[in-house]
Structures are given as C-alpha cells and as structure tokens.
Length: 146
Image 1 (cartoon, rainbow, N blue to C red):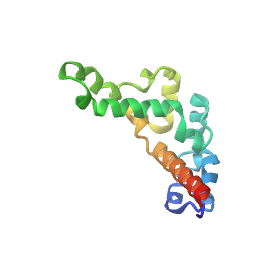
Image 2: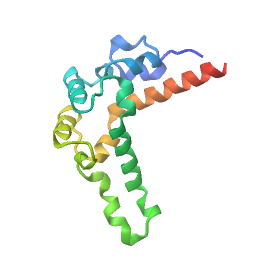
Image 3: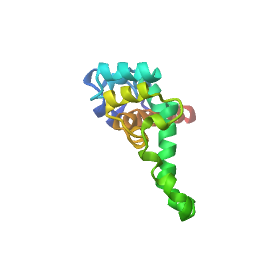
Image 4: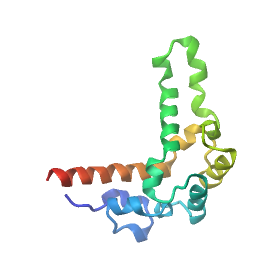
C-alpha cells in the first residue's frame, strides 16, 4: 500500500503536496490551506496545538464533538421534559467546556471564528486534520496486514 496522500493533498498548501499522510500529521497546522501562521500561533498559545496531528486529536475538540453529537441526538435519548437543556448545549460558548478559558476562546475566535461548541466541533480545518489522521491510520493498518 502506498503512503501517497491522494485527494487529501488538495486541502494543504502546495509545498506539502508530496508528503505522505503520515508526514502530513507531523506538518505544522498552517500547512492546511487557509490556516495562516498567525492562526497557528493562536492555536499553539491557547492549546499547544502545533501539528496537524495535534489538531486532529486534541481533547477539547473531541469534547466539543461529543457534546455536539449528544445535543444533536438528545431527542432520541431523553424524555421531552429533559431535552431542552441538552439541545442548546452545542450552541453555548466554547468557553463552557471546562479547561477552555475566556482567553483561549478569544484566540479560537480570532484564528477560526469559533464562537460555540458546535463551531469547534464542525470546524473545516479540524475536519481536514481528522481526515488526514484517519487516512494515516488506514495506511498503517494496511501496511501491517500486508
């Protein structure tokens, strides 16, 4: 199995197009097209996110995605009387997540226009990083079974 990046390279700056998906995980966050060095510096300052792999697997992003999924399917999980408080959870400020300070939230807003938990969960740059991580895991798996 080749470690060629394939379609994912379209989401990275040109100088990263020859890298394998495994190498892309170690690339700086600003390797993703549309992420500036300034944006990457804000992520590093707020959460010590320095690489695409860091962005893909950061705990606050996972928390935001879990909370958003929970809020989106709460009507299937809870009786109507308990639903209301959960449904709006994903639309709360990102600083509602324990460990994200107001200062961190300001940096997320400045870097990626992230205001809410849902915004963090669904951020397009996070999606690129997580897709890269999934592709890298698939490459590793396929290499180990061949």
